[in-house]
Image (spheres, rainbow, N blue to C red):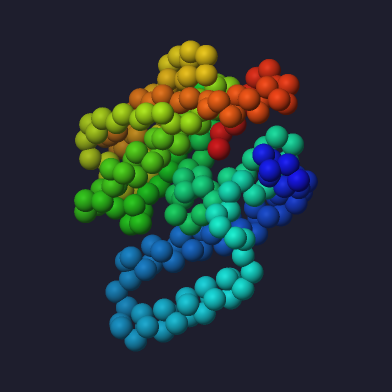
Length: 224
């Protein structure tokens, strides 16, 4: 097996895995939200804890070693299901789904609803969560423009508090210079932009060498 590529499975197998794990992961997200907001009596909490510990033990009977990584792939596609922002199997992920939209280079949009698990100040999104989401969005924009890279720097300006609840995120590429891509983005709440970001994404040397070894002339667009 090539260590640079995830295991290959068919699109049908990929769809089956997604159909199995997406609702399972969402159920865990609901559990996290319920854990934060429950007001049941102590006996119920202790009973629930015992049930959760038993379920955890069952799931640990068979598991991968270390992080999940890009575990599945078809063709040149990677499925980072363990990713903390977009991972289909990661209950920490909202999850965020960026889609191409708009007229600007590499422009992507996403709609996301952030609940109690993402709270910083009371009723507001933690500033670090905004940074996390914008890092992903700007990276998605760079990838959509066929100029992907890893984050070299990310600068944020917090314009106003970001409320919990439904939010819109936008990102786009301003320009690229060789293997460097400059992108911008923002979080938009009900009263307008709350956080703005600018970042530099650099395709590392090992990735450039890998593409050259494969004879690739350009990078295919990706959104995760």
